[in-house]
Length: 87
Image (tube, rainbow, N blue to C red):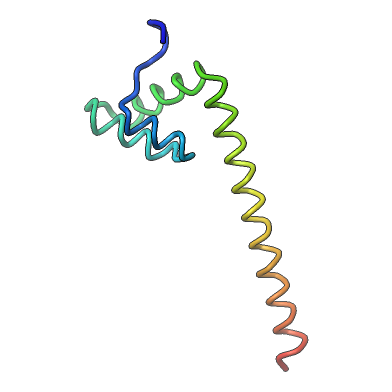
């Protein structure tokens, strides 16, 4: 790590590795005593300085979007089934 990269507490790094960006921001705020706005800036700088982390978070976002889409389709099919067959 060079001087331009912000240091994050280990708890924040672990949260990011799990895809929990908000959790990382909260950890930085709690441990460093910074505002949530400043903590978000610190986390964002950390992510931007690490292309592997940026890619990891992006892929987790896509995965969650696909899971959400699958849930919405299943919910729609269940509703359709209920309207057509439950009457």
